[in-house]
Image 1 (cartoon, rainbow, N blue to C red):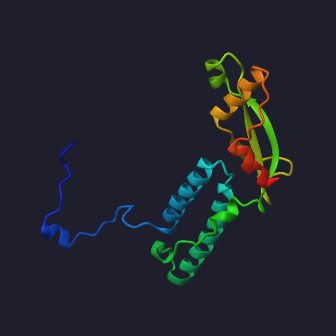
Image 2 (spheres, rainbow, N blue to C red):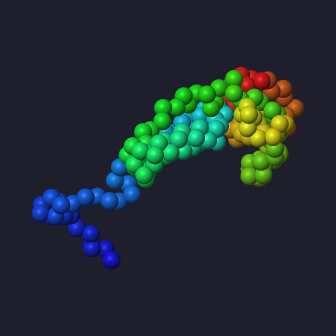
Image 3 (tube, helix red, strand yellow):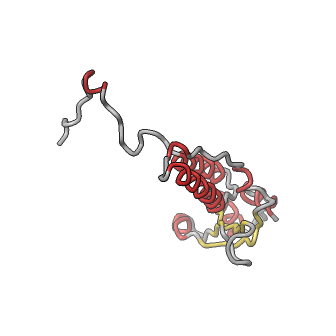
Length: 174
């Protein structure tokens, strides 16, 4: 089947109209691309980011815009739905997110590499007005290298007072 596609000729291009699904980015595609970018930024910095709240806010906006388009045209015109302007910081701000608990969880993969058990700290956060009280919504794990340093010091009976970047960030959310 290779070689079937060919570029259109000049005559064909004159009457050509692209009807493919990705010919123009709609509001939802733009939003999901921005969401993925912001979530990746926060994850790399070990900052909690609540994706579900952002998606719920967008869905609420999108439903309203769809209603307006149906009322105006009788059907949904995707190009009439404008991309939403979102304050991305509110989904990772300490005013909206609270640290619920810190637990240590054994990392079996890292423990196989070392003569001691490696326990990774897991920071569990809750976004306000979401989920059940007392339960967590977001988990952030510390880096494996930091966990190995801490567990190695404990294995060798050496005091380890160094704070990891994840622990420093978690103090903002208490």
